[in-house]
Image: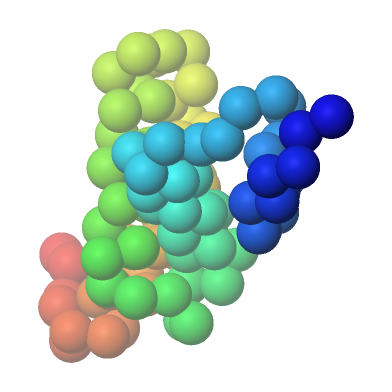
Length: 88
């Protein structure tokens, strides 16, 4: 029997602990999702990351371009209202 004490903290999920890079990526993905659901509460960085996400999805799958545009529209609208940008 091993008499050394266990390390404190939460046990790792899925068998291995996440690296700091994996945690950061998951955090950024949550920011993008929250910007899509509640654009008024999201930070500007999250709104811009959301637009970037939708632009990348248009590049990778042109068949979903209409959906990506429809999802990005409220985010763009929020940025325009927030910074008083008038689109023609």
